[in-house]
Amino acid sequence: MADAGVPANVVFATKPELTWRVIEQAADDTLLVFTWVTDDEAYDDNTVLRPRCQNRGLNHVFAVSSDHPLILAWVKTRTMPP
Image 1 (cartoon, one colour):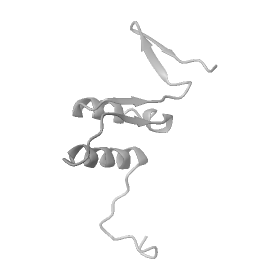
Image 2 (image 1 turned 90 degrees about the vertical axis):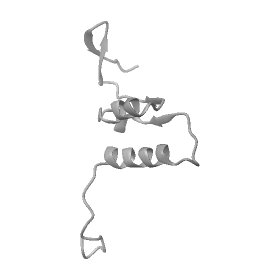
Image 3 (image 1 turned 180 degrees about the horizontal axis):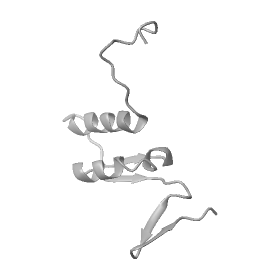
């Protein structure tokens, strides 16, 4: 990493973690106004972003993959591909 010029204090973060940092920075910016957070299935299959958005009171909609488990009427199921 040093050969690439990456500072020694940089710590690895997953794409969902980096995405959350961007969302937090945007939500904390008093000059930036937005009403929804959206993302594709690659991020919502990592189930951390949805509760983080809920806890911040952010409206959000994330796509999920066709085999992502769902709970409907307390029964775990999954979506079916078209």
